[in-house]
Each structure stands twice: as structure tokens, then as C-alpha cells.
Length: 357
Image 1 (cartoon, rainbow, N blue to C red):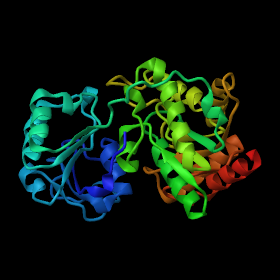
Image 2: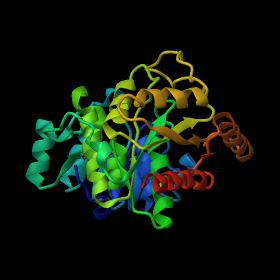
Image 3: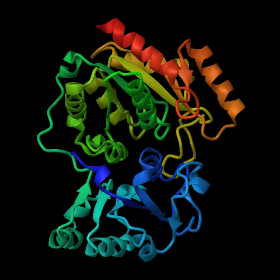
């Protein structure tokens, strides 16, 4: 799927869930293209700014009235949260209908495809506007057969201790740092948020299981067409009881040359698992390194090149100590590439990419 985010000015819908951990899509769009965001619709945080709520984003206003939010000058509505089950809440239908009637496109990462809705899809066609359901997988995906191992580019996959620990953010930060150094590096999106940011990709969590690895392979082949370093966005975690399948599909389908292990430094258990008390303890980082390397080895041996920590909920001193401990425990370079210099990880990638030539 190919999109053109730079052509639009977006109103983000994050009603009732706009916050550091509850609106991943909204937050990442605000971080990576704030100049395209006219406002956030959320009745809970109304009257504040993105900076107030997230700690970044500057003066982007949070508005609690949808009509007033539309008056901010948006050309498209972007759904910035994932409601329970990824389905369209009934209350949202009226909001989206109003937006379509006024000629705005809809960008959605929901599991329920808005374009297939008889009322909303029909209205969009009648008004000549587009509904982008970015989780809709492309047709005719292949079954992986190891072709990703044959590309000339050096392929990096982010893997994690859990969901929502910064796998996409790590790759975007590393891509930007690599490009700044003059390398031909390309970020490849495997989730709806990454697709919103980059403009193309495949949301692999909506792909039939047999074709997840094939989707990863196809993405690597496409990403390597004009890049020397391909940075593939990871999903889930091999130790997550619900999402390990997509992680393994990406690991085997992309045949990565190297891995970056991502972890939220304050998280000891797999996060809230659909309302249950946390019960899967995250093993030590050194053990996670071994888990991922052993899982990849039968298809294509690879190694973890470094540790990316998410320290957003720590003080500066606590974050620096967490980075030091991660490096000492694993013997690998570590950093939080949002908070600190990404150079330890960038240096490792460049060193290994050059050695692989």
C-alpha cells in the first residue's frame, strides 16, 4: 500500500485514549510529522496541547468538540488509537460521516475496514474522497522461500521483549541517523502507524498466518531496491502469548543480517494482557538475545547487534544507569535513541554492514 501523507493536514481522532501509552499511532504521527497535524480530537484531554499530554508535539491543540476540530483546517481524519478489538465504535460513525460529507479523506488502521462499510464506503465514493484502510493486506502474497537472504542490502530487524516497547521508533531514529551520515538507509513499515509515517508497507498483523513470512520477504525485496541498509519494523515478541506468531513470521521471512533488541527499561512483565494480571515475566536481556538468535538460526543465522531501551518514564539519571546496565549485562552497545545519542547502535550497524560486503 502506497500513501502520500505529505499531501494532507490531519485531524487525529484519539477520543478517550490520548496519552503516552494509550495512543501509539497518534503519538508517533505527532512525533514524526507534527507539521501535518492540525489538532487531536479527545474529550478527556480537551483544552491541553500535545506537549502537555505527551511531552512533545508543541502547541498542537487537543479539542473536545468534533465540529470545532474540523474547523482547524484538516484535509483528512486519521484514526490515532486502536479501540477494543480494532472495531469501529458506534459513536464514531457520526463523526466519520460528517468528515466524509465535508470532503475529508479517512486514514484508518482499524481491523474493521471502513471502506467496506455500506454507508461510509458508499458516502466516500459519492463524495469522491478516499478511505485508506491501511490494514487491508495486498492480494497474492507469496509464501516465503528465503529470497530475502539474497538481497545485497544489509537487513536489520527490530525485535522486542514485549509489544509497544519502541521497535518502530527505534528503526525511524536509526534510519534518520544513518541518512544523516550519508548512508542509503530505508525504513520498512509492517504496521499501520509505520505506514502512516512512511507512506507504504504491509500491516502484517492482518495477513493470514501462512503469508506473514512471505509479506516480510516481499517488503525486504522492495526496500532493498534503492537502499544499502534496510530497517524492517518489528512486531510483537517471541515471548508474548498472543503475538509471538507474527514475530516469528517476520524473523524467518526477512532473513535479517542483524537484530536490534528493544525493551522498556521499567517493564518486568508482558504488559496488560487483555485485562488479566501480568503473568509472563520478561527474562533478562542476555537470555532474550539468546532466544532470538536461536529462533532465527535454523532459517538464517543472525545476531543481536545492540540494545534499544525505552526510558520515557525514567529520570535522566535513571535512564543513563539503565543503559549502562544493559550494555554491561549483554556486552552489546545500548542506548535510548530518542533520549540519548543513537550513535552506539548506528556505529554497530555500519561496522557490521561494511564487514558483510
